[in-house]
Length: 338
Image (cartoon, rainbow, N blue to C red; front, side, top):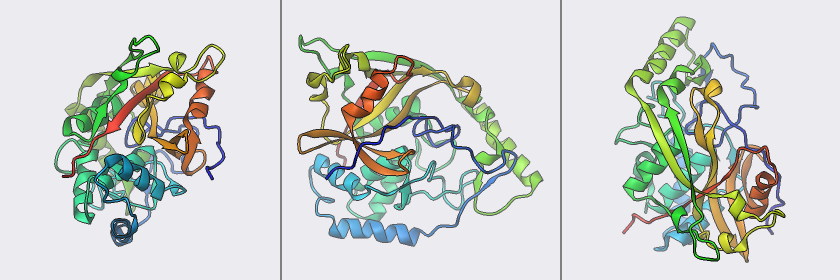
């Protein structure tokens, strides 16, 4: 039986891995002038889970990517939600959260983990794919991480062959494409300059002087980045629902099973809060099961990974004239593994 739908209001978190899964209303108990002290962790625990998946999840090694995504995303249902659970590992300069884990996720790391698992045959391949998906280069660093959906994550992973944007394919009953363009200027320098000391996530305590020095180094990364223009095709809610708020089944039927759904907020006005505007606030998987289309997501409200009916999930925004959510981008996951 599917889980009861929980109405979800997506918020923003200021300084997480990427411009999605975000929540500003959850107050951080850590003082902004102090680094965040994180719990120690063991890769051995995560490795055991991954090896168990490849040994015991029947569809984990299927040759069909859709079958894999469905099975692997299902495996983590009910897993705990934690905002920003991954970083650059124990040797990371600014964020020492683990490079991968299997016990908790946010919306981005959940999708990344499932895609990496689906494109791998074993633990070592999984580790390499996680790095490849999460970073622009070969080596993990805060600077090279895919922080922004519109100009980093989507663009780089389309180029690498993990995903393909199929939003342009959606047509109405007359055969006319329905996609619009969401444009935004991603002010990366402004984003770095907005960081507080609490954005430093470290395994060991630091003195006030050490924290200030490290924060200055993090903020100075603003000198190594530029503003970038991001443009994303999206299917507007005004097309997905009619004037009575009823779903347009013709369009929902075109959403591929086991694809990624980005929640689009065109030019989302967050500059005063985080130093830049955004285009995306959340993403998860579109999953078809027994004739129903679900949104499989790591939910900050339910505090776990859940399935919710996609039309019902989007309807809350379609029926709200003040909502900044305006539509969705649809990304197919493409297989790399031979």
